[in-house]
Image 1: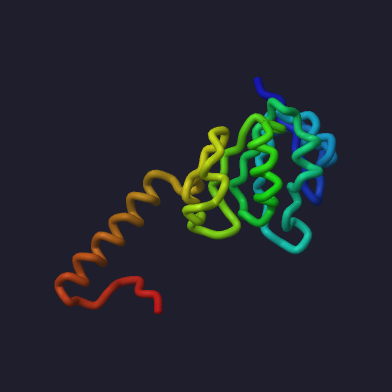
Image 2: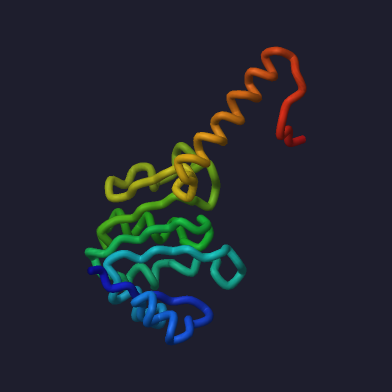
Length: 152
């Protein structure tokens, strides 16, 4: 039952918009309208800090910003200011400019933000396999065996 509006560099063909039940909106209109703004874009010179103080001011005070793309697409200082001054309701962040997020980062003091350590994109099965690989390598190391998937 949720209405989905989107913005991207290249608009989807009309038949895909109809099939997926999505509506194209210019970025400013999307920011002014959406209850949840989900960022899923690559970090390029064009997208760096594409969400800054101006864009956060356009958002509704009841809106949430969710970033699952790259930390650099959001101006973190502007986001901290918007969160601390309740210009937006909250944020959910899985990515940061510097990872892991520094222990003294002001985002960690905001009570209206949920932070995850860049793990939101992994499926349960993939995480299980990754952990299995890590534990198997620890066992190899303890036995003095050659390590698998070694990065130099």
